[in-house]
Amino acid sequence: MPEFSIEDGHIQPDQDTKSNKNGVRRPNINDQIFWESLENLAKCRDLLSIEEESFINNLGNKFKYIR
Image (tube, rainbow, N blue to C red; front, side):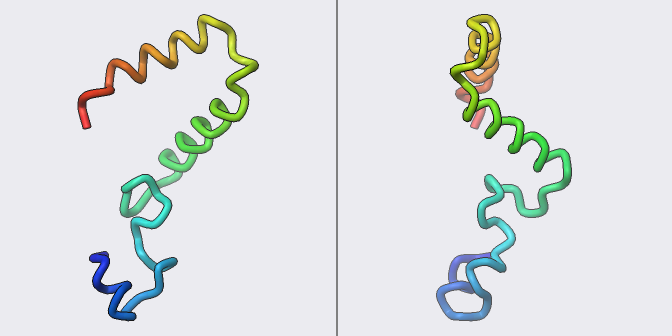
C-alpha cells in the first residue's frame, strides 16, 4: 500500500502488506522457507565448509547485478 496511507492514518504500519517481507506483497510458504533458510545460513556461517561458503558466494555473485 502506498506510504501516504500509513502517514494519513488510513492503515497502521503493521497492516502494510510489504512490511518486513523483502518487498514481496503476498509471500507464500516457499518465500518464508527461503528467507528462514537464508537466516539460518547467516547465523551459522562459521560452521560452513569452505566449499559451501564458496558456493553461496558464487551464487550470490551470479545474481548480483540483476536487481
